[in-house]
Image 1 (cartoon, rainbow, N blue to C red):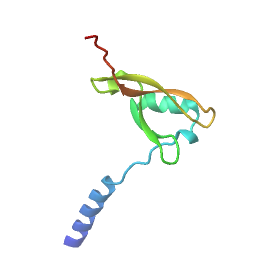
Image 2: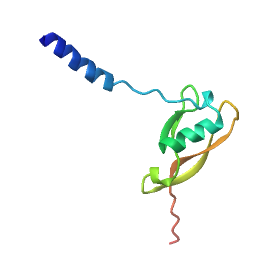
Image 3: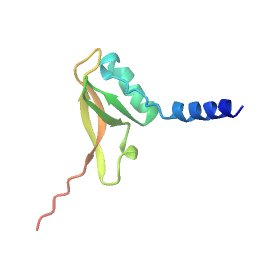
Image 4: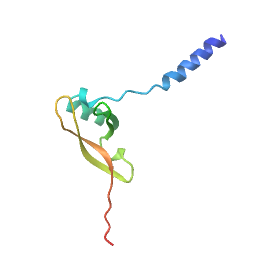
Amino acid sequence: MKRTALALAFLACASGAQAQQRPSTLNLTCGQVQQTILSRGAVVLSTGTYTYDRYVSDRRFCERNEATQVAYVPTRDTPQCPVYRCADIDFFFDD
């Protein structure tokens, strides 16, 4: 009985530790990529074999010192699908 309880506890912990696979923009259409970002708010997407980035639907998903910046990702139907990502705000002060 103790072994069964221990095994169940181990399985419960192990299943939560598995990483989710990042969706690849290369397998999706531009519309699907944009809808995925819009529905989740922020999502990490693979854009190639070894490349990925975090894309957001709007500024609410950026840090306080960041703003949205247009980025282009390759998709199944177009080489440049427009999406947003967070980027540092550059403040220029004249001294």
